[in-house]
Amino acid sequence: MIDTSCPIGVFDSGVGGLSVLRALRAELPQEQFVYVADSGHAPYGERNDEHVIARTHAIALHLLERHRIKALVVACNTATAAAIRLLRDTHPGLPIIGIEPALKPAAQTSKTGVIGVMATRGTLNSEKFRALLQSLHGKATFVLQPCDGLANAIECDDAIKIEALCAYYTGAMGQFGLNSGQMDTLVLGCTHYPFATPQLRAHVGPDIPFLEGGVPVARQTRRLLAEIHGLFTEPALAHGPRDPMLMLCTTGDPGALRMALERWLDLRVEVSQVAIP
Ligand code: DGL
Image 1 (cartoon, rainbow, N blue to C red):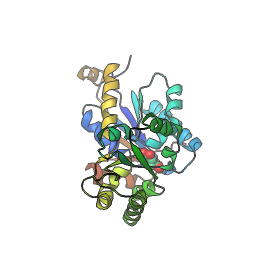
Image 2: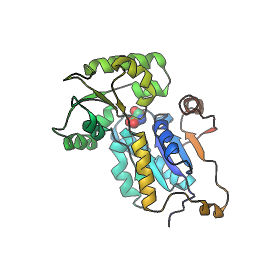
Image 3: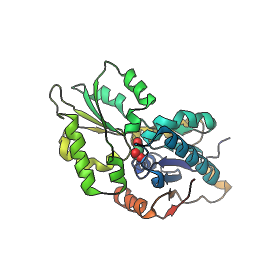
Image 4: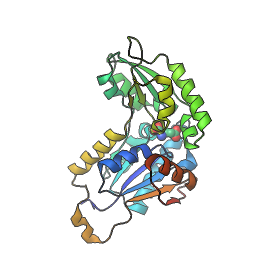
């Protein structure tokens, strides 16, 4: 029987998963969340699968043992692609929700049928992504852009690098616009990239929708927990007072996570540093 008063675990290689946490908190305001930013071992997107799989397992175990999480949201496209199947095999009783680049919704809404996809090299090279692409064969043309360095620049809050990489990658992808043959939709296939929205917008123009996975993931988390009667209900409080609604941990610099929370989620909260070997 699931203890509905337990928190939901959320993790990413760093600050990017905050874009998913924002959507989760909006969708599930009664729930507690524990967020782990694995900034001490980031970026994931240019590392090999072994590294990403090992980190994913270590963080899941930490969240289960230390925080008794009732569900886990993998708020990282790269970790989802590399490790979610193995994670589900290892923890069959734990609801695990992953994130993938929003190719399906993009194919449904694009008018020109040409869609830009920015993601990490790890995501684009994964089998999971190849299968997703294959499932949409003939439905749209996808222009795939691995964005080496962009997640890390966002992680380090390096404004000059973010601007330069956004200019370079959007330029390399080709023409954005609403005319035939142009990309009329941009999929942000890495949870860090929504935090570069103003810089990307400056290069692709005002008419191009940006599709990211935060809101669909939050809805899926609600659906999954509802199905197994795992959503928090008031009577669960009979077990005693709850911990704070939000706990934030990082394996890197707490100052960086604190700043990102303040800037992007307008939250001023304590951040603790944890070692997750
Ligand atoms: N935020 C991660 C993702 O969604 C990866 C960033 C990285 O560590 O490379 O793919």
